[in-house]
Amino acid sequence: MLNISGIHEGYVLDHIKAGTSMKIYHLLKLDELKDATVAIIMNAKSKKMGHKDIIKIECPLGSIDLDTIGYIDHNITVDVIKNDSIIAKEKLALPKVLKNVIKCKNPRCITSIEQGLDQVFILTDAKKEIYRCRYCEEAYTEKETI
Image (cartoon, rainbow, N blue to C red):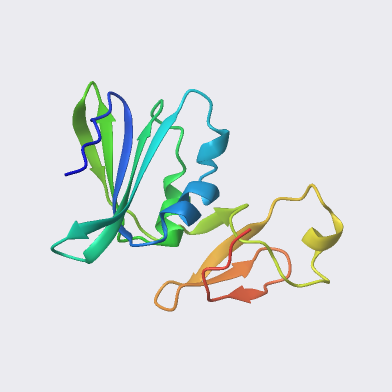
């Protein structure tokens, strides 16, 4: 049995679709977090899902963008840990606005010309999970990311 110790302060991302934890790792830019320890458990057995991934992040609270996680998969459970105890279980939802998560593919979009401009997308259809570029209204229905 694999044993990974608990964390004093940070987050536990659970019920991640098996094989997608590295994508989440890069989207959350966990490699850029200073003073953070990250444990990734891949293909753990799960009664509910068959197999799942888990990410444990030891870091100061507020360091993680929960909207990005909600965009990737709003069924992921997020436990917030402080002083070795779970202080909250965050319920994720599709974020209404995404900033610098999706990159506009429209070559005529202003974001293709202005390199420093933020990539901003607005949720326009929650049922179909469609986001549109704030500037050119290009629609994105797939989980396309930077």
